[in-house]
Length: 526
Image (cartoon, rainbow, N blue to C red):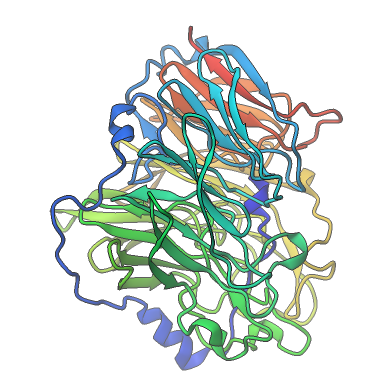
């Protein structure tokens, strides 16, 4: 998922002192409004297809875990390639960088030219295709609800008829040509939620005046219901809209049974700083709501609370991994909590009712990752393509966290080679860690020979991930023991899905292959 991964550096930090201190209060509590019992509900097709993979992260809690599959630690070694579907469109990050969804016997997915495909789950044959040919840096992806497929190009949200791929509605969400959309939407309560980001391609990321706005649209018509600006002061952009930008979402938010929506907000910019404004001094203060987990009323978009994990970010350390909802014992009482992570290489647990932090845990390598940056370049770990880049998974009170160890050389004024400068991916490493969800304690960790851009996906007692070099891994959730591996036909920066006895994997980035073969692969027990 190098696509969104690379989401070109994201950094920020400005006047420290009082502004940062006030940001660290971060838990801004506002009273909740009561809702009827029908809030926080997924589309009816999800429950009817619980044995498949009906959403980007499987469910509204973003668990990325299923127990309704015959794939387990005893059977996983029997997975064999059943079919492949060739992916021909390509972008700067390959052809595919998201999660396929699968239900009603059909696999739906979106490539990095925004084109949407429906493929027969049994045979891999094309059912229909809707062509947009609008390049995206990803991770993008689609959602299903009420007979419609939802997704976005860089400027427009859309709905397609799931039976034939015909366009039902389309709505432009970007405020200017410096903004875009590159996330998979979330569907709940007849709403479909999107977010803009401060960029719409490698050449136009983090230009002044671009920001991320969350939109809730009517799922049937595309009519806006509410918006939430992930930049606290909106178009003022922390005092310098000609220079500053930031915010927005990479991934679908989670939604709880009370109708609360939990969003994970990306970084501010300029990244690191500029010659005129070193260390992000063009945006003094905490730069809210960047690098924050934010709870919203899902019916109105009203702010309930927020907690900023990293005020005034100057290292491109988005807190963008989709929040996972769970229940944890807090002082002996079962309490709803949200688990979230980001490119700073840290995982956090917060109370869902007020944002109180419960624990934090670091993963991967850390070097020169705190404090102001010097005027001379230094090596920073995690780098701007490091830390936690892709979604986590939660099963049986174990949180599975993919991480990337790849450094960035930068100083107080930016990257010596610029945002689009060369990156040596061969130097990158990665891994998958299992944390105790109650305490954050590391239970086990497996280091990988290449960067883990493959998220975590759980089927019973097996957790799957993959690396940029094109290897797919299956580990025992309890011990971390390797149960199965398979070499794909290309590098992988997308996320596996499980539909019954079938594992779906997109191998569609170059990796280190001389002649990569981009394709969606179905591995099956049958």
